[in-house]
Image 1 (tube, rainbow, N blue to C red):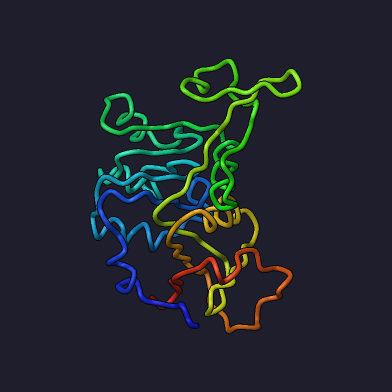
Image 2 (cartoon, rainbow, N blue to C red):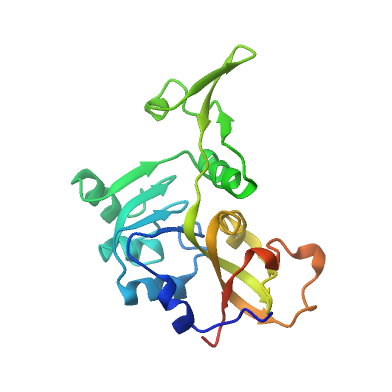
Length: 217
């Protein structure tokens, strides 16, 4: 089934109060067209789950500046002064999660696991309110899965039914968030016919993808 649609087709999926996972690392590999659509629709009270909040004028940072984000779950916010300001003023909740722990919690959701055990954060403020287990004499935190209503993924090339490949560092969080959301929208660098992608290079299989946004949309 051809899953390539226009931006107008996915606009009704964007709603106030959603939790949205967004791929990218400092805007590298971020689905910018979908970010712009979120800004255009001006949906509010969003929970954004991502590696970072980018810059004030790029990627996720634009959503923060536009006042659309209620909560951020990310590994760092240092490149976006507006995120820090809103956090310190109590206007936006920020949950800082170590990068490896964050992606493992997302992976756990995609794999249907009950959580992951990690020593990262033991003995720090990160462990507050979390279950701690001792295994073979070593302490671990139980980190629970993170999933979302919607995942916005950027892929370098996608065929018409949704098989996706990623080139270089644009891979980052994108493949993992595609496994951990109720609806997955992939923004494609280019769209190709079924059969044109080398099967050995496909990272995200079509079964995980609901909609594809391409160059002409």
